[in-house]
Image (tube, rainbow, N blue to C red):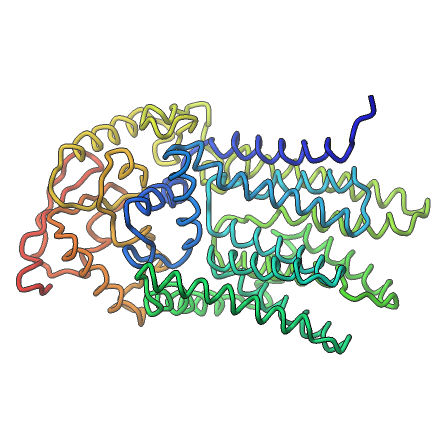
Length: 516
């Protein structure tokens, strides 16, 4: 019986990124990132909405999508991972389609796309704004190439749609890719003197933005709140971070941390110059160079663990494509070298980010000391719990969290919980959520006093306390009253230590005459 190779390839494209993301995504916990969208997505189904009910500077779309998954399939760890796994599968599939459509042999396209899928979402495993934004942006680039190659408005619509979804996941790098696609659209339109694509792109963009505005209006989120939290406040962060990047710093990164990018970019640029006389409607090589630089600059601005190494197999595939198109024996050795270099890179970064869980900050932690997640909560079945802070005594962390959950379940007063362990709200079925999605110490998740939007945030926070008639605020270490006390009067709180990590802060006179 003859095997249908196309169907077999699709089978592997479904199987590999799914298995890798589920398996490695369930190893280890970095609480602030691991549970970033767990409680918040669950509470959307209870009437809470991002921006309207809790301050968030990114991840707006991820909350909404995850809430749909929870609504349909139930609130649990497996469904939490399903969201990111589907994105990982789609990325792997469209990478395969992109490489094959450009002319690369199916077996090599399968190799490079699987390598990209292994390195893409599994470094985090769980839904995360940085991953969503860059992966959806790259998928938009694929569809943009399809639209130009086939002169298709259908593919152009999906280009705009993926950029739109990427931006609502996280503003950058999506905004940079929007600029890149816009410039390419203008350039190709001017060259061909055909402006139908620009007109269509404008119409599609207007349609999608109108849908967003209607959603903001009917959900009572409001345009003003959206622009302040999602556009204006993050711009203050971006301006501060971009000021710290200079050409010397970027040069050092390209030589040290991103050396494989540098090698591939040089090769692709050489291939571009060599084939420049072949007039293409769109230069894939030049597009990939721009894509690489956007990703590297964004990575430097993020000041986070690297997530962009999954782009290397795609660049390797583009280099291989040039060798395959030439079909000359002298290119056999370079072709083999690029294949083996791709495999080496995949193994290297798979080991660092997937196996060792560098993104989750447990690279040097013994993962064999894990505790089954279901011991913390039935909703976390399948999670192998081990954290950096309690790596030598995970049982202590388990006992402290269980003790805290037990105490919180007894609390019947209107209260809020501020914690990195953002599955606890779902576990105790609590109906009040903190006015902030997450709390970081770098001024990224909410404005500090030095930020121009501090007063707006402070008023937002206090109003939520009054609206929900909050009588107690619970904090779980490493978070404490410092995360919110700076916005209240000095005599506003009375604090009590419940256990080693749980603290109760009684609000005494914060609501007197509705003044703080």
